[in-house]
Length: 385
Image (cartoon, rainbow, N blue to C red; front, side, top):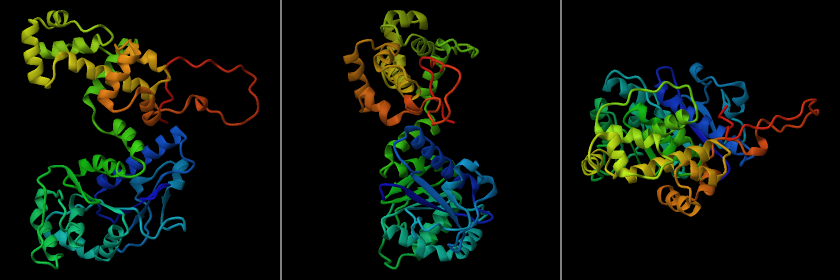
């Protein structure tokens, strides 16, 4: 994969599956925005263009219209010279097909794309097939000796195309029972459109832009622990969010208590009293529910809060450790490294979701202001635009 930018091609025609195509574009847009916030690259790292079933450029779908400020990121109806003739990633988002014969008609219509798929792989690129689009990868022979995920309603049709594309009758077809998505040797396949975001982020994670993909993953993919920590942090920070009733159950009462006491020293007897049970019973049920002890769960929550603050605020690292219940700098570094594989400072540099402080509130050249600059509010992040 090139080091400076990645070029995506997305197959599109009337009847294409919009959810898969738009999920790819949304992920690419967010990563480009994160790259701009970090200020680490002078140009937009991810670019994309739309092609039809014959491989020729087409205008972007109406629903995929993006702000004019991002207009340079796409190619609508043309291919600028700077774009390589063969893309780094070719995406087949699939089609709305009622049955196997309709999938067959789509594959026949997209026949001119088969050499393009094969050439993309031959030149070291990657393929992403979504839902019924996996069938075109099968017809092109791109699933040969690769594991792949496929939608169950079209499995018979897909296997027929995979078999027909094999010149070697002894070659095996190695499908996966993965219910969402899988990758194997530069080919990503999704059995369901809802898995597209995770698959494309995993794909980009195998390129030189892995750190940007990891940052985008924190935003786009579900993160139950981070979600709970964020809500607890907002409440402790004086947010006007309405407090929900604590659900019944000793384990849930204990979990809620831990969320509200992240900064306190761990006290199992106090936790058990809050959950209205004995320490021994609580420890047993908590481990059965969450797979870890209450203290280990608290440690994970503390690291999640630290990650949240490191990514979205300018609060000093030492203060973040104290706010996360790890007041000793050495203990904070050790615990954070154990859970994330990074030291806090390195994690902030790699995964921050706001601009660097010198760029905060804009530093563009211009006439001097008649008003003195306002002091920034401590800990307020520059949110994603």
